Image (cartoon, rainbow, N blue to C red):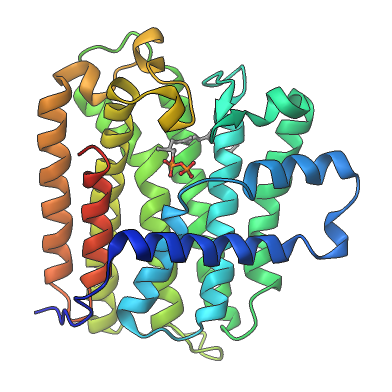
Length: 316
Ligand code: GRG
C-alpha cells in the first residue's frame, strides 16, 4: 500500500548530509549568548554534543517528516537537535563511574574524564533541560498543541523508557540466560527513544491544530502513528542487538568506545546469551518486521525503510 517514489537515494550520502545539517543546527544553538556562563559547564556540553555521533535518532525524526509531507522542516530540525541533545546527555550519564563506567566515548575521553564527575553530571542535567527549551522556545511555526505533544513524547521516553531501562541494565550483570529480561531492557533503554524520534517527526507532519482542545479521533492518522510506533520499537531493539554484537566483534578505535565491555561486566546481552550468529538473525528478522509495519500505511516510506536496513548493515 505504501508509495515508494524516492527510490534513487544513496543512503550513505543521505546519512552524511543529514548528519551535517543536524550538526550545523546544533552549533547555531550555542551562538546564543545565554549558553556561555560558566564556561566549564557549556564547554562540557559542547564537548559531548557537538563533536561526533551518527545522529541516527535525529535523522529518523527528519526522515519521518519527509515520508509524510515535509511541513515545518526548520522546526523539525530543532526537534531533531533536541532529540540528539537528550541522547547525548544519556551517554554522558551512562559513562559515569556509578553507571557503565566508560572512559571513552565518540573516540575521545568521556565527559567525566575530560571535565570531572560533578561537571559531567551537571552538563547532562543542563542538556536534558535544554532539549525541552529547544522544543518550547526555539521552534517557530508549529502549534502549541504540537509542542506539548512533542515534549510529552520525549518526557515519556525518559520516564517510561531510558531511566527504568538503565536501572534494569545496571542490575543485569551476571544475567547469562534471561533473554526476555534483556529484550525488555533493550526496549526501554534504546528502542523507546528511537520510537520517540519517529513519533516526533509524525506529530510535526500530522498535527497542526492550535485551537482545538477537543481530541478528535482521526482513524487514518491513528493508523499511521500506530504503525510508525511499531516500526520505531522494532528498529530500536534491532539497533541495540547490533550495538551489542559490535561490542564483541568491533574494535575500540572503530567504535569510538571501549569494546568487549559486556563480557568484562558479564552483561546479559543477546550475543552473550544466544551467540552472535543467532543474534544477527533475530536483528534481521526484526528489521523485516519493521519494514512490514511500513507497508501497512500509505506514506512514502522509502527512506525510513532504507534507514532501517542501514541499522542492520552496520555489522556487514
Ligand atoms: C539521567 C534522566 C537520565 C537518564 C539517563 C544513562 C541512562 C539514563 C540511559 C542510558 C541509555 C543508553 C546509553 C542506552 C544505549 C543506547 C545506545 C545503543 C547508544 C549508542 O547510540 P549510537 O550508536 O551513538 O547512536 P552515537 O555516538 O552515534 O550517537
